[in-house]
Image (cartoon, protein in one colour):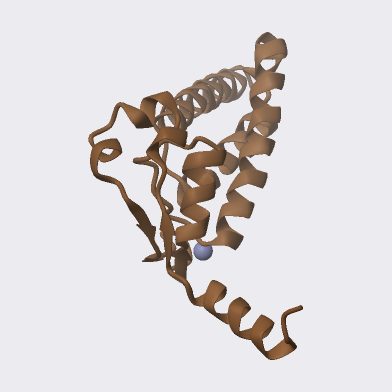
Length: 165
Ligand SMILES: [Zn+2]
């Protein structure tokens, strides 16, 4: 049986280890087609700053191994957010999915629902602070156009009201 001191030392080495063996044969098919599949031998800790809150963060060698070999993430997928911001971005993404589902089933009613559109717009803009995606930009433009149209028709109605009075 390992002595307690030895165990502690082993644990310390494991924690300190900033290198992990890369096994490209375990990557997703798409990753295996990348040039990195030819030369990748190991993962090394990647130090970066969160693109949202600027906190220092580490994409550890072990985390990389897990992401690419077990979760089959694409090998070119890099981390840009710290752990907390990443969790928050997931929460926002889930809420956005709910909005998209609602929109999908009740588009005809919701296209004139200013509260819904404004809340949706705020959420997409918030999400964009975490991860900027093409879909977000397209969504933002669509919702802004709908809100503009609503405001224009409201302005016309107000003008007509004023003219009648
Ligand atoms: Zn952060």
